[in-house]
Length: 611
Image (cartoon, rainbow, N blue to C red; front, side, top):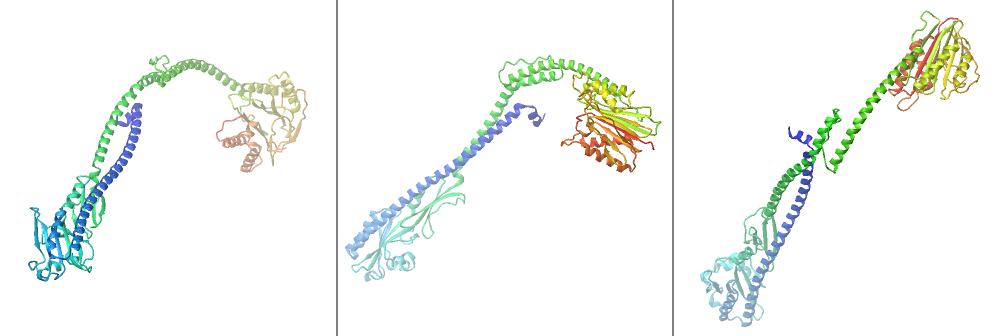
């Protein structure tokens, strides 16, 4: 059995699958939502920590830069106060370099030829030995340096022209310490406020890299310090484009400090948490699936046993013992329902057997009654094959096994006696009344010639003790076959159609139906038939035939069908059998399979004798 068949045949498997799918969707949705917010929280936390660390590093750098500015500014103010004496230079420089350990060298650069005896430039210098940390004195303005750096180095050239304190751009000192550094320069003024010298303090940059490295919020973060002209004072390795970058500036020197944190390293913990949650989710789903399947299968096991018993009941074993389920839930109620159904089915089958036997007996009796009823009506057509003056055809189609319509005809003394009738109601009662009416018609018409006499006699007989209040619409005609004179009388029946040169309804008096009013008198009517004329009689089963819309067949469609048949023949004479067959087919097409609501009877008589 493949997996699809397994799910088709197992409710437990299907329920388990649906529950697991729902749980999976809920857990995945919740997990995705949580991880989305966790990643956002991690990123925000990382930015906040990095921002704090960067502000701390910038503050430290700013403080140390400010300390240098304060020390140099204080020394410059002291120099302005003490005057321009050469003897004070070393004292000022020594106090300055000793007051701030970030200063690696100090220089007092006098203007060109300020002391002629010292040469073109005079620049006493004290520097801190990077290895022994001892202070050493030098004079970097003498002929030994050939003065070239003072005229070619951009920092020194600008220093000679500055008007206010100035931090130069980073550079590599080629004279004293030979390290990357920056210089803070302050001009000195004489009594006339003219610049006569510049006090310069060189600051090494190794401590800047140390500060930003120590301030990094994470070991994998990278820190960069860039000067205002784009030079890297502290440079990290390249970490790629997918990273969080935060930067800010150091006041005074206008350095940009930036921290770069690789995104994949930030989210490493979150990704590991996602993986662990996914593994946990899979484990939970497998565990839940197995446990849920076993529990559901156990709970549904009584249904399996119940299904086995009901299959045997369905095969006809109504004494099959259902499994004993002592439960009060839906399964228990289902068991009780099946048990009640089992008893009801057994009782129903017994009753059905009795009913079937009774119905078979009734159907047999109805078949016999139908045969008897049909035997009472004319059934041999053509009825007078040896006569060429008249042709008759009739048919009766009951709505039930037996019906209440009738028609009859016979010839006595060269006169054709015929009738058509419709008993109120249907079924067996109507068929009994129909039999009585037909019998009375035969008995009375054997000695009476006038249709009115025949109807009056039948009405008197059927009205007497009519406790069932059933009645018969009846039409009686007597056609003199020698001269074509038709005498007729109507008792509440539909008007026949006379088909000759024209097609029209036969003029009739409506009168009461037979069995309604005793002792009423009716009159005989008459009409002269043309040779080849046809009289078409029918019951209301024709006019009242209804289709699904619903619409009635009605008298209009009767006339249309007769007109169509006459036009198709192209002659005055019509064949009674063909006429009725065509009319029956027209009705069947109209109702389009709808069940008949009433008995349908038609009778056609063609008078062929030439007068």
